[in-house]
Amino acid sequence: MKSILTIGEILVEIMATDKGDGFLEPVSLVGPFPSGAPAIFIDQAARFGQPSAIISCVGDDDFGRVNLDRLRRDGVNVEGVRIDPEMATGSAFVRYRPDGSRSFVFNIKHSASGQLALDGAARAVLSRSDHLHVMGTALFSPRIIDIVLDCVVAIRARGGTISFDPNLRPEILNLPGLRQACETLFRRCDLYLPSGTELYLFTDAKEEKAAIAEILGHGVQAIVHKRGANGACYFDAAAHLQQPGFQVDEVDPTGAGDCFGATFVSCWLRDMPPSLCLAYAAASGALAVTRQGPMEGAASQGDLDAFLAAHSQKHPS
Amino acid sequence: MKSILTIGEILVEIMATDKGDGFLEPVSLVGPFPSGAPAIFIDQAARFGQPSAIISCVGDDDFGRVNLDRLRRDGVNVEGVRIDPEMATGSAFVRYRPDGSRSFVFNIKHSASGQLALDGAARAVLSRSDHLHVMGTALFSPRIIDIVLDCVVAIRARGGTISFDPNLRPEILNLPGLRQACETLFRRCDLYLPSGTELYLFTDAKEEKAAIAEILGHGVQAIVHKRGANGACYFDAAAHLQQPGFQVDEVDPTGAGDCFGATFVSCWLRDMPPSLCLAYAAASGALAVTRQGPMEGAASQGDLDAFLAAHSQKHPS
Picture 1 (tube, chains in turn cyan, blue):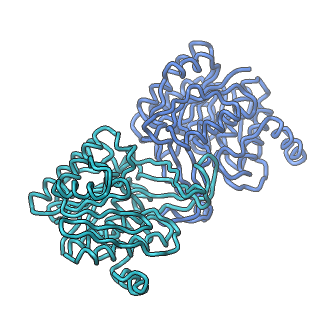
Picture 2: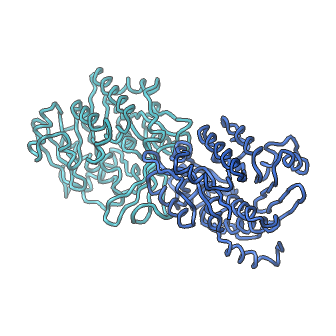
Picture 3: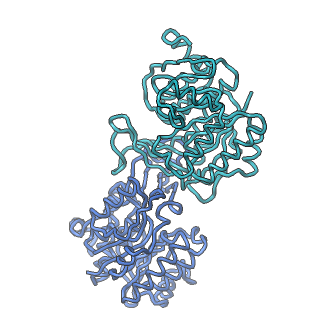
């Protein structure tokens, strides 16, 4: 089976238990939950049974250990994760507002996550990987952008494939170097997984059909357009498929897009037909939102088979 | 009234609500509480009515705002607090173990706290201060040690006084430059406030009476030896006073020593007799432990008068 590598931030997430705006007074919280978009992605890929590895960095503290313990337990190869003796493991505090939007307090850029490196252990992991998945969130420093682009070259050189999930809000594309790095990855990826309006990040076209044609014209093999609770669409040169979202009771949407992506990429690497990739991915995203915590809803292939069987009346795949 | 300046870390504290060991799984938490030993100290000094200021740095995030809001509300001059646009406000996660000891996850050294600077605003605050209080916790980088020593020189040059609370566990004195900086402060301070075995940090003597004589021989005007729930002792060339601890229901000991020190220093700057300084300080430490959160038990002089009146039968001052 083809192995997946990702690179980027490992964090703990601390969640407010009640809705409200921000963290300007003591509130009830729960955490630390293992988190970080690349970490959630790779944990779901491993849970699905794909050989999986991550290049990252954590601090020598309980927040690093809670992540490494979880990733190891779920089968992720963490040999490429540095333990920095100085810096603290990154963190994200999140509080849901009454309208469902989120307010955050982040410590990422100047956390241990910023100290990931392509050292000997990371290069060894890279040399054994068949596929690289990149999330835009990981591209938060020029140093890390360079490392990611080095890995793209290495994976390509050994005949591997690349997937790219911009996972960015348009307003943070203005960080120095980030937009250009995203555009480079967009142009080099085989599989492009934008969410919502990210579909138009690198297109002149302003409407879907023309944007899809433009993206496929750049050499992208397939596009998976994520639409949250509304499901997803798949586009390649030959096909246009639509996958409705599964109706579930949403407990916590954080991590759903990452789980969706991980399951899609895993299925795609197993050469499953795109309609089945979509169905598994949508089931994975749906299960993710039913659990509190970003990585808590990661599911095995068996879990997803059971979910799809239970939901087959409503949503034939 | 004489004004007090301190320098050092401003943090948020996030506390586990249940006892246990470390943060290796999601637990119930409460926070963010305003914290940081120098911040707790200066908040208590301001609450007691002393003109008070702090030189520090926070991030441009809710954790910085929750601290600045509290310090301003309680009357601390925060003009010397930088707001760093890049770094996150420092944090300390704390969980009490069943035996009463604490396990921590810190982010201080590489947080905004590390970016405090003697800029124009901080120099203006320094030039108006009569007394500098230094806590050993603040001396976590060579840059900050230099800033603190510059402030010592400036305060001395205008005839001001210095107090020093090592506030260190012996094992972290091995950080580069820290031991030497502490020793320099020990030798330059007027008022020395060690806790427990810190009394012997810079003495050859291994027992109390000889250690006191040795310390007073170095030019220290007075020693306040803090003994937690067991109270405190005061020593100068002429007097040896003992203050028993007040019996209160302990909710959270964090910050008690800082509040004790702030109230003692404030009283001392008002030329109160040492026995009254001790009584107010012990009341301040006692009230601090009755509230959850490091800075939540900071008390006004009126609060302390009421506390002392209520406890005067048991503990005549």
